[in-house]
Each structure stands twice: as structure tokens, then as C-alpha cells.
Image (cartoon, rainbow, N blue to C red; front, side):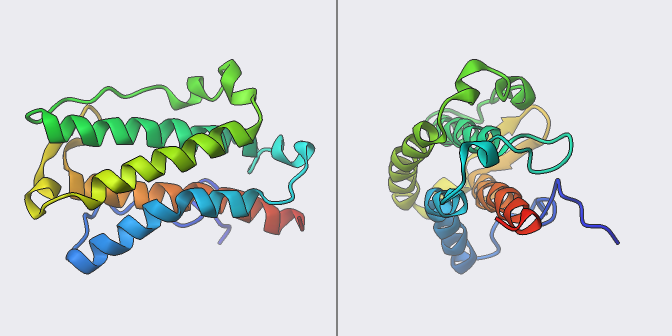
Length: 174
């Protein structure tokens, strides 16, 4: 069976962490996303960075900018859920964002932003009390979500997109 290059680590299973140990693992995954992304990018030429990770897919450059866009949105979503009663979040057209002029910028811009963002995000997440993880937000497409589930989603999200890049590198022998 041919691998689905869209989901190199599989689709998100929709499950929040089952216990605190799993939550800590997810927190570590989120914390390590910027470093994993930098490692995946090491030594790539501009031509390689402008290569789609699969036919019809985003370029490596677009993937890097997308991860930063997405994680910026997630950080704000966490803050909304902490400060409002079951806020309904706004979604966005990821594909359209990937075509905006800032998605053509050097990847270092987004990598630096991702580093700073994750420092703040992990600081915030590390301050949570047990009840904070139970707070909810309403996603227009995914319904009611706890912050525990959102954490699991973004732990998966970072690894998912890093795998797009590392998979391409493997296939191309880079």
C-alpha cells in the first residue's frame, strides 16, 4: 500500500491526553517543534526550500510559514479559552494564507518567530492548573474542544509538518 504523503504520521486521532504523563509528553512535543523544524531545514538550498513536499502540496517554505501561522492562531485560542467562557474561535483559509506574499519570505523569519512564540506558549501552558486543561472553546468545524484536546492536536501538528519535510528529504536523498 502506497503511503499517504499528506499524513506521514497518520491523521490526528482526536484524543486528548489520557493522563498527566501523556500531557507532559504532548507539552514536550510542542516545546520541541521549533528545534525539530530547524533541524529538518538544516542545509537545504533555496531551490530545495521551494520544492513541494508532495505533488500538488505546499513547498517546504510554505510549510514552515504555515506552522508559524497555525501556532500563532493556537496560542491565541488558548488565551481566549483561558479568559472567556467557551469562546467560538475563528478559522482561516490555510491554503489562501499560504499564497500571501509573506509566505514567500525567507524561512528564517518564521523560524525566529516560532522560537519566540513557543517560549511564550510553553511558559503559559506550564502555568496551567488541572482545571485549566478542562476549559473549552468552540471550533466551528470540530465542535467543542478542551484545551487538553487542543494540546494533543498541536503536539501532532508540529510532528506532522516536520515529517512532511523529513519525508521529502528522505525521498529526494537530501
